[in-house]
Amino acid sequence: MKRRLAYRGRSISVWVEEATLPNGHTTPLDIVRHPGASAVVPFESESDVLLIRQFRHAAGGTIWEVPAGKLDGEAPELCAARELEEEAGRRAGRLVPLATIWTTPGFTDERIHLFAAFELEIVPHRREADEVIELVRMPLDDALALIWSGELADAKSALALLHAARHLGRLR
Amino acid sequence: MKRRLAYRGRSISVWVEEATLPNGHTTPLDIVRHPGASAVVPFESESDVLLIRQFRHAAGGTIWEVPAGKLDGEAPELCAARELEEEAGRRAGRLVPLATIWTTPGFTDERIHLFAAFELEIVPHRREADEVIELVRMPLDDALALIWSGELADAKSALALLHAARHLGRLR
Image (cartoon, rainbow over the protein chains, first blue to last red):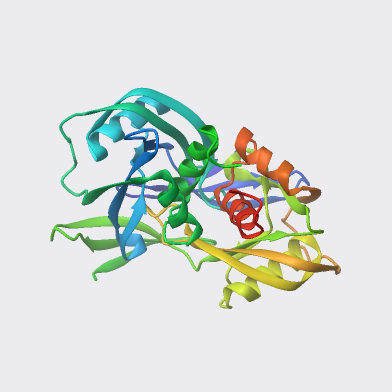
């Protein structure tokens, strides 16, 4: 595949790639190549989850999410465990893989691996300076209600919560 | 806000923006500015939906999706109606807005408006040359099963189907 680096920034790189379609046509495409990420739903109890309120410049304000972050050359499970410690101050006794999603395959190869975390233990936060995060504990059912109302709009977080609810038999 | 255009491609533009966090810190951020998009779940009957199988270069193959596309300076409802005609060859008697999602707010402001389409009428396809799309009709429950198994992994499509199922009282 022919491709050239069109832009390398601090956090993303854009490649112009010669894409060959199944019908044989070729077309140049802008692709943000991404290392992938993990996102994790922390269960504080059988019924309660931890959500985070996080400032997102691109969203122009603070939005509901679950702990998540980019793979740092590590396995998705290790990334989920690390982000859980950094963003929620919790260590998981048990991590359950739920699914892997494409965030927006029209212009990036970013995939996010979704997990649920159980048997949590409180550990010191190791938060990065630029992360402004508030932790909120709530019943899983209330978190699902935030999805249905449209208030929890972050795709990875909504899908992680819905997959976790399905895994626990709380969604039929 | 200070910002500069770092890259303008065919389909995406990247800006380096001076982001101010709630704690007062400022940091340069790469942001893919996006016009937004609409995605729509076509209901062929009370129980059956239309999915599409679409080749995605970034995903390295063909994936399950629902009809969707970028806003072309139009309202989200009009975009959903247009993409439904272009990608599924259907005109909707009734479009129901479901929710609006952030696809991946760490590096883009892309939002996708989700809809369900009812009372469909078959119209001629007006497909773009580069779109390689196969239409597949299946029961909504089978589409949900594809989500739970991880086979339907496109975030907007999974969330559109789940919101539609919830809207119809098919998910509790």
